[in-house]
Image (cartoon, rainbow, N blue to C red; front, side, top):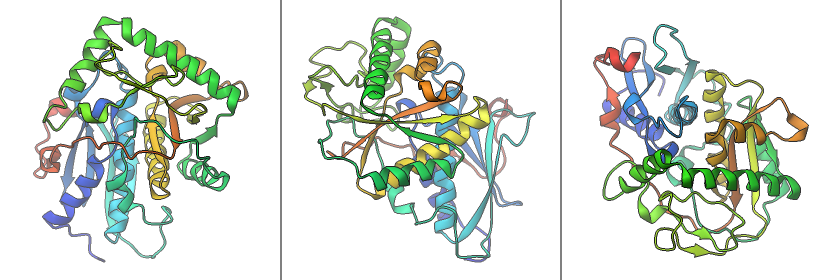
Length: 335
């Protein structure tokens, strides 16, 4: 496709790919506007889907928007065009997080490497036990390169560092259980999964670790056997962290793009992934996640990688519910 004229079918494919990105508690906190004159897709923050208790600064929201932007880039390239992106393009409208102008492609090459479009539809978190099958070193290097190409550092945790990160995550999970406001917010989004198109459905929640070594999030915030049955998880989980040198909104958006690129590359190679986000929701514990070798970096995400069950996908709202075609995005959304 050499023209940048998008018909409704192509545009729906682009937005469908974007909203397949992960978001905290599957809130899907975004809105899209398509400017027909400039062939530009805008990504706006959906204020009504924010998490004031667990994500008061909106860092996780920005990471989700960055992941949606990366999926949009992949889909634009897959359909034969070239995306030109800008982060936080308008200081007067801080809720406008990113834009992607769709241009004719003049070269068959793409900085995404292999086409990751198919992986968009297969990627989802697996909150179930993984096997002890090791992940090949060459694949870990490829994941590190995927993050580096987006300007983000991926670090593989060794045994001692893994134990330290799990201990910090366990403390965050303990705090989440005793914080009434956060627990209510978490339960609200897990309960929304009953037949709805947002939140985490109960079929995707997964069990708790019977070894009590791997602190998987208990969305019920009650840690009862009824709400979170126990199963033995892998004894030596493989953890990687994604970090940035600064901690600005643009860094969060770049981290989201790197996160999604890593997740899609992992998915293309048959790896399962899950996010250990609990410690990132507490400022002191997030600081503690820094390794001794990178004391000035800012950890943006902690990932668990391995081989195992596919897990269950989480629902998505229809892309038409996210999209504004006529430029009528409300001033409330733009502020």
